[in-house]
Amino acid sequence: MGLVSSISKEAKVSALLLFVPLLITVILLFPKHEEYIATGDIVPVEELGVSGSVYFTYVNLGVTQNIYEKLTIQYSYDEIEFIPLDSYEHENYIYQLEEMEFSKDEVVSNAVHLPIFEQSQNSNELLYNKMSNILENSSSYAGDSFGLMLTIGLYEEMYKKDFSKNGSYIIAGTGTINPDYSIGEVGAIRHKLLTAEQNNVDVFFIPDNKDSYSGQSNFEEALEIVKEEKLSFQVVPVAKLDDAISYLENS
Amino acid sequence: MKLNSKSIGKILSVFLWGVIILNGVGLINTYLFAFHYNIYLNIMTFDHFINIFLGVSFLILVILYLIWLYKIHIDLNHFSIQYPISPLAAVLRVIIPIYNLWGMWNVYSTMAKQLDLRFDTNTLANQLRLFIPFYYFLNIISRGVSSSLSNSTSIGVWLASYTVDLVLVIFYLLMVKTITKALQIIAGESVGKTNEIELKPNEQAKKETV
Image (cartoon, rainbow over all chains, first blue to last red):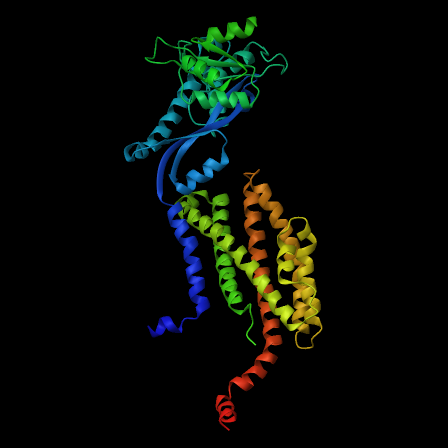
């Protein structure tokens, strides 16, 4: 009692005032595990070391640890969606990221080793170097959804094409690539389409592989989003690499 | 006479010290983020803690500072009837955008001029005059760096922001200490006179009973 009364009034007020930020800090650091998806950007395949004119699309994706992270992320991005995660999903998130890295390696390998490219490349060493170069240049991106656009870029490089007609068109898209030239479905379609819209894309390729997947295909989902969001660019469904190449060659 | 700004001055000093410490820790954390990311990963939650604590403390600090500024002007106006800035005008000089480009300097240069008039606060006036350019330009640089933080992810900008804020808060503390000391000296004379009366209750009591 004597000690408390000997503390000056100013010291008491200061302690009380310092308690306010402390309380707010504790509240903001309260665990909040949610996955977030936000619009990202379109990136020229040239950035991957490929002499092509097309773009791949990325979105910002991750998981929040607490309320503070959620608020700062919410503040950082315009179009953002949060999906609550239970404790099991949260614990497994790190493994999912590792899986994404593995699938990226696989899709780059698929793209570089497609028979149309292998015919004109002399040795395995060249292919290996190409693959390492692409993986190194794409180290800041996770996932495999750039496979289709990477392959179109490699096609332009190999056959000396410029599908953008000297930059007159912005051609972007999403989708993985399989060894049989088929295009695999991907996630985050809404945010990829919104990213394309924000970047004034003219043509956007989207997987349409109803045979391989049950339920709604990426293209079907995209059609709904285009209508809902009144998107202005052309969405082109592709099931095989040929669909994209013949569209670009003939348009 | 008891200073109006005495209590708020002490509380403000405690907060300034707190913000200096938090800012220093934040600067170290940012350095680790930039150059030793593996170490930073172990203290990431602690860094978030510091960032939030610092941010909220800063808001409280601004409010305390404005109250202190208001109160020291009550004191200055009390000590000098001709003092040219009223308490409210002092606060407005600091908070109104654009106007404060002139006002921030004017508030303290006027104060320094006033302190210069007295022989016993002359040295403190010179000290205050020395701090003004640092406080003024650091304030402007801090605002510029803070506004570029929202458009930039550059680690250099983050480091610059923490450094400028840290030095700025140190200058605020120096100015608060100088002004408080000067006001205590001015008030000390009247306190002495007042104490003379107050410390002799028996004598006063005697007068009343006589």
